[in-house]
Amino acid sequence: MILQAEGAVARLVDRQAGGLVDDQSLAVDEQYAVAMHVKRLATPCPFAPEPAAMRRVTLFIAASIAVPAQAQVCAGAAASMASDGRVYGHLPYGDAAPSELVPAPAGFALNACLVRRDMIPDLERLLAAAQGDPAVMGQLRGLSCHRSIIRQASVFCRDHPDASADPDATRAISVAPPGHSEHSTGYAIDFAVRPANGCPDAEACMAATPAARWLVANAPRFGFELSFPGGNRQNVKWEPWHWRWVGTSAAAPGAARARFLFAKARDQFPADPAVDRVVTIPSITPITYVTVPPWVAPKPPKKRRR
Image 1 (cartoon, rainbow, N blue to C red):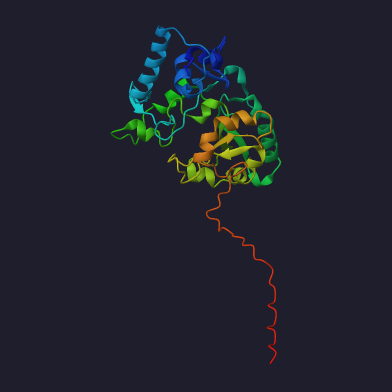
Image 2 (image 1 turned 90 degrees about the horizontal axis):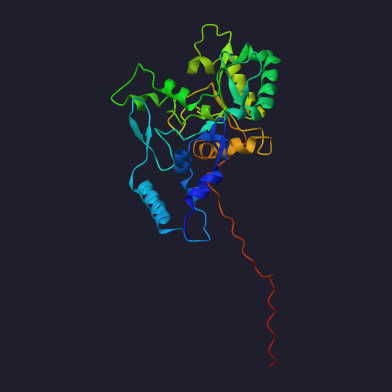
């Protein structure tokens, strides 16, 4: 079979006024689309292309295999990229298309806050439930919502007080590199609690608030799960404020797309608390059934005649 790469790229990328958008409604450029979807470009071609076209495809595949993938981070520095696209442990995410983003409910955001349109119904229900529950003892607000890849770069690359010989690796413990943040999908929200009452929204302080405890107990009912719990295997700093939306069920409107984007994260680095949490059984004792024929009493021996 011959790979028809150019045709496959054309099917994956939709040219819109705001830029290029792939089939998951994420803003990309053609080079990104080819690099990130290379496995999906392997489509059978019913005819053999011209020799020159065949050489272009062969060179592209050879180059992608021979050269280790790298991601640009800060000040022109490059970081190695794992085979699954992870950089410093963070999985890759594209930028949500502007047409998919809408303002968060009025009064929720502390700053400008755009989220995916599909999330709005569940977010409104969550905020209404929190507002009507005296156990919250405050008001849930949105500190950070969608962040474009460009905005994420400015957040990631600012000076870090604990910068070491590898400042980018130090930053990545608490901030995702550009192109690898859940915020760029439009499905993630950093919650804050107001009034703050002296709490700077840092990890332990935030987690100890009644509102944060309410989120842990109730957010999954509204389709939200905690992406980075304490001690997570992704080695990302505990973020009790960072919740991603995946819908209350796979059948909820828009949930299938969100769950597709977060499928690898949910499988390899489970949220806690999570929506539709997967329960792993450590071991199973096999049961063997043996068919035994019915017991038949032996016949008494016959007496011999003398």
